[in-house]
Image (cartoon, rainbow, N blue to C red; front, top):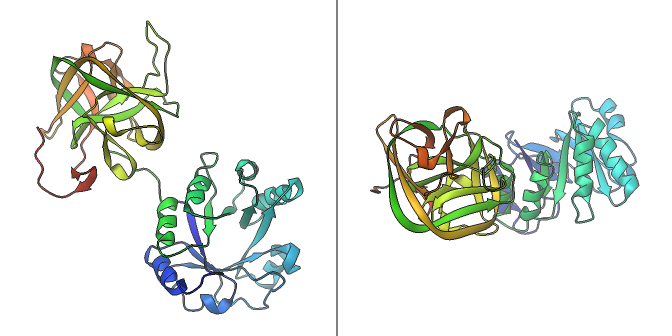
Length: 368
């Protein structure tokens, strides 16, 4: 889990409302420069004291973590830890050049908490710190200017910073920061679907979804004609006789088809465009979000595949009617769509909710 730290040191009139929002959404920590601002906070939130430059109190009140800047506070976390064994101490480092980057790497390797402020917009220094701390037990908390930057920080080098500290611009930012920290994709319970019928249905438009990511051999995207039933379409990572592999692409299906995106929201394939997000899924149900780089919609012959789930629910998928378009079966078996026969088993997913403009909703909805 990524950590969300709310910096309240410079908040104005909206401070109380923002603080209540942070507590409601269960942000992990509140950062203040005065012990009095931490006194009335509930035990559900970590109380972090980050004293003003040049000021280091002798007592830390309710603070459970204290951040120290050796340059301005005139002391180190190690020195304070001897005097206050019941408090955790961390180090603040402002990275502006190579020597301060070395300081940040050393802090990340040795300190329980490292709060880092990168002055340059590039994320390469953060990548270096994360790599340097790969075998350490400490936590890297990176200061972000806004939620958009927080989202990037959480994804640097795939591992990302352990947490983000941010001063909110207004009400709503605390909730958005928490959402960015909790943006892990879910594990999906895939089911085995038995093919009942295939039918050549003539011409129509199909969409190839080209992403900015290399898919693994057992990975693709879920696609279906109905929001409550989808089949796992494999990417073009497997060799083909007449063309090179394109491991970033899924020949996904007819343009009306649904696929899954962030928060399990559905999107029509026709809606996807450069910058859209889709959910990549492997045969074990592990998921990740990938970014669409391009969608190619072209007229092609189509094939309709009908399958049934163990609970009797029917699933339909319409694909390009061509041998090289494939779906995945149990164990990662790669199945050519035109060679599917009744009794064959494919992998699928059965969302339980109906959809309204792509969002899950509990209401009556008949799809056929």
